[in-house]
Image (tube, rainbow, N blue to C red):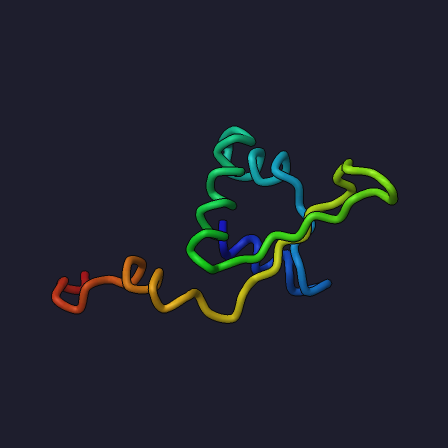
Length: 87
């Protein structure tokens, strides 16, 4: 998922794809996609920005930005242990 967001960000600097696109791509529900996006955001891999319609609380577009580096705190949980054998 992170790779797809990164790829879609190359043109405009952000990913604008909707959850429906990702759900169809990965054959999962939109709820699962929301959970995955939230996990990437919480771990510091992406930033999510909502663009609202003028004078409204209605969301016009969601922009997902790939961050340069995840936070060091979260990185410790995502990197393989140096003691594990490489297969």
